[in-house]
Length: 343
Image (tube, rainbow, N blue to C red; front, top):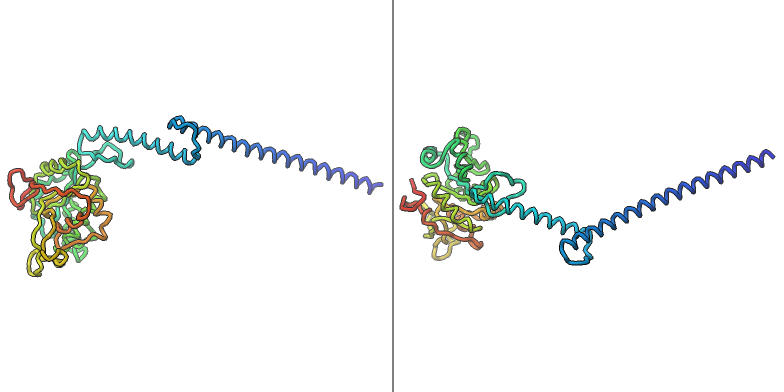
């Protein structure tokens, strides 16, 4: 009797627990189904909304476009609206100074005007007298140098490399002068040498393009005196040309004799006539932003020759570049209308 009753109670208890487990499982399954259905409904509603919104904006009627594509198109159109707003802002800014016709990057959108030009004055260790003369004659110093940048958008710096005996008295002297004047670009990975002038000019354009956003980049020798306002006016007259190379264009004989001052070791590359292609004189020339960026990107494969003016000219052969033979950049004499003169 007792054993049979105990058995019935155990069976009853077990059945009760089974029913509870079944009910809990059913409730859980129902809740899960409701959740999934709700999510699917919400996604469906979102999809319908996005497609209807796209149809409303495009006026193209019913669309079978996917949600992902819809989002991409909507995002693109929002960016176009933002682009239009930036163009309006830039149009207003262009009336106030030398501002690029291209949009500035979002990170650079501030009240600063885009620079007109970065001018690099190529110098060397033994030419401190030339630098001092230039500072007195046409290159501002101290606060006036900063004012030139802010008001006229022109940056001027002396450009020099490092000594072959790194850290020697020549390097220390340049470091001291740079700290006092704050008007140098010191190219640390270039060894200063007359035979490496072309490489130095290339590295200047690379450095300038990477550190300043300007319409033009110009190279000047440190024995040249310029009217910087007149240079700015000449450059500004070419703002409508996206790829322009400006200078006193010339050609001339290629010298194959080592004893000649203008000897070109690779003279044979210039043909039987031994004549250079047209290129700007190295005393002063300027290139637009697109060309400076081209040099920066292709620095490792751009060939340099014995002379920096020939080298620069060679970089633009074969490109869609406007060569401007600018008589005002011919510095042989301070003639009427010229912006420069040799010392």
